[in-house]
Length: 157
Image (cartoon, rainbow, N blue to C red):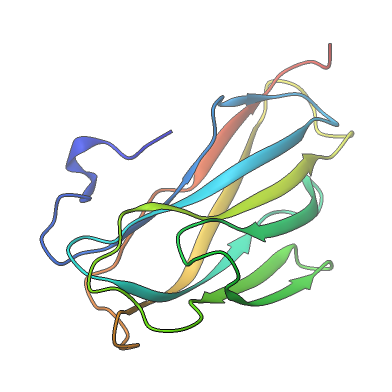
């Protein structure tokens, strides 16, 4: 689900980071691929860092893989805390960064909804602790973070 028009992706100089999933409904045990997307505004991007927070009672984290935004083989840090459900993920472009970057996928998060989650409840995936570095490896200000991704749990098929 992309951010709404008043969400801020058109803000001049502001980068927007948000989660996207094709459907807002999920069944217990179902695996999901959630995209982390970045609209960088009019600048180049050399690196991105975020923390994913999920409830370990609601989700099993299966992995996070880099998207295409920072090139074919970015430097990568992936630290997962199974007890809290938090994962820190950082990517940096290898080599020089272009003066502008076209928005796109930073990463894909693979999670599985826990089998014990009851139907007709809502579960949430959220990003925080966002750091985005511009083409000169300076921390960007004015970063807009999308809302948490809320999913409705349906009965397993």
